Length: 246
Image 1 (cartoon, rainbow, N blue to C red):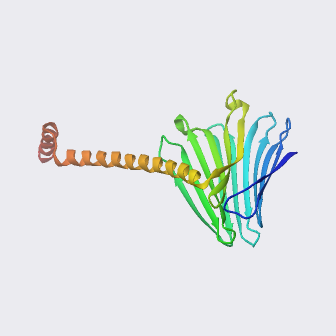
Image 2 (cartoon, rainbow, N blue to C red):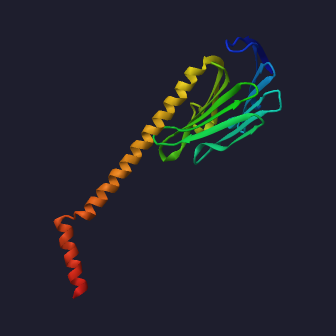
Image 3 (cartoon, rainbow, N blue to C red):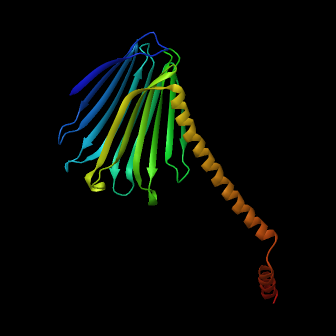
């Protein structure tokens, strides 16, 4: 397994961040990409596993994230994705577990035709570190998921280490299996990450409100039609009443 180590300086931390990257991709074998961050007592591990099927294509992708504050608190996230003939890229499950001083919040947005989006934020009161994990699913017609994008940010004060995982289909189509692209880690500002997440959330809420307004307008139209029937509707009603009376 090929590896590479580097050191990143954060303005808001007195400790240097050690970054260890390991990659293993051999023909006809499961591929793994693993990132490990060490900042003082805090340790973070993010592992992306590509499961190879008998035909040689990638049919399953695992994303596992574990953060340990070094003082008994932890954050754990596990995501399982698989290729499905009917639904496209299927999210089998996403599980999150937090212990000790970690607080978390999870939001789920779905407003077609925008991509479905889940955002998990967490923060440790002990270490002062935290993270933001986003999962975005792009659906084609008939509800088939054709692309999934997952991002993770290890947040230290005003800066983050950012990793992006893009999962889609190879040029050969769905028969060739899934294509996995991993970008990062790169250092970003927390302000920029918050801006990107909040912008997506605003788009979702705008779409949801527009959809609710359209439904409400339709309801008002139906109500007005009932309260103020047309001449034809009145004639039909009178004829029906005459038939019943007769």
